[in-house]
Amino acid sequence: ARPAPAAAPPDAIAPDAVAESLLVDLRRLDSTLVVDARYAGPYNFVGAALPGYEAPRALLRREAAAALVRVQGALRAEGLGLKVFDAYRPARATAAMVEWTRRTRREDLLRDGYIAERSRHNLGLAVDLTLVELATGRELRMGTAFDTFSRAAHTANATGAVAANRQRLVRAMAAEGFTNLPEEWWHFAFDVPDPLRFDLPIRP
Image (tube, rainbow, N blue to C red; front, side, top):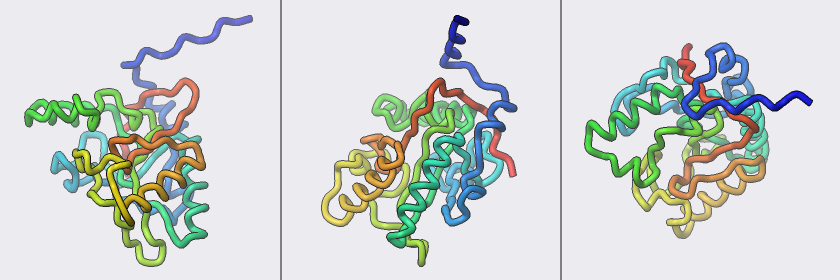
């Protein structure tokens, strides 16, 4: 039998042609998904568009994208849908986030797990999102804003309607194989065998 190929080293970046073959635009699969690409503009924690975000689009690995479309379909029956804040993230953008934490002396965000030097977003296998009413586009109450770096954003740290909304999102995503990050109610990851790291810019 032929030996299995060696796994790519963790710092390896797959060629852009490979990224282009594996990443898909979410709205091309389902136009009812709402995309509010926060890192393509100034409305994020660094206050500026991040390197590699040249268009307000949301991309994911094909496998994860297909699963997310199934989540959207199930929610549609309840009059709900998904609003995506971030999905695939070029590796250069993650490096810029890490550099920002050091420049602003916020290394605590690295230590506490809110920002990762090696992000599953770089694999096209993580997505940040919330629930909205399809008819109005109004976001359901989740207790904190996206990218709130505090214990209040921990998924389990909520009560009443906010807790119910967070759990509704977790259940809908888990039904299609997504796992929530306990420190961030909005962050979900999907697994595929032998994932690859990408740095393909997100272009129009």
